[in-house]
Image (spheres, rainbow, N blue to C red):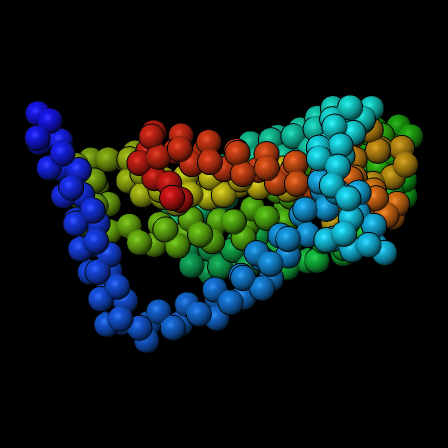
Length: 320
């Protein structure tokens, strides 16, 4: 047994070396194709990886006069300050609350919309619905936030309807913290559901019609074909998009949350990204805000890896 194990241990490097040589030969034989990757690699190296050097100020007392290199190291001082701050749990609760509830509400809706549109046979009606639901995605976040503020103002269309239908006083939607999450998530649904359905419609377009024909011959109803043909066909796409969505669960939209904030709804609208902006750029606490942002990114990375592994084990579909 010992002889066998020693022999195999000597054989492994030979196999890996031959694999490496084969790969290098394949790259050399198709170097023109690999050259297409060069601009992308250079772009990410300059604009994505090189700026990561600045993350080191999270472990320093950064001074603009001294620069990143000469600023003194302070270890995890800024992280400890954030973890012990009075609003730490409030920020975590608000960020996770908005992102998790938002994910639960907004993720299945594009799938349902795509499955529904795929069953529509009237092309004119289908195009009308598609155009209608895609259009909100192209409204900028600033304009969208302005529209929400106008619609929900005491004299806006929503309050006018409330007053006329119920006879009650106008509701101060943007001043009450309990309404913020619902407003934020519903606006996400309105803006992103149609565009999110495009990917699933593309996946459904790739389903072999012969499978549907065979199911019809077997007596399957429309609902059964959706359940047993369409849904399994888009499941790998859904799993990949779910992994990506969970990987960004802590990175909920900064712009809209910041634009919809009012002094009275801060208890539920203050999230990590808006807090980093205020502390970092408005109060010039660069090291502290970088530490908070780094903590946010690490949590996202952990979630991404965990969900990716779980998806790989459960459905054999994963990003890496």
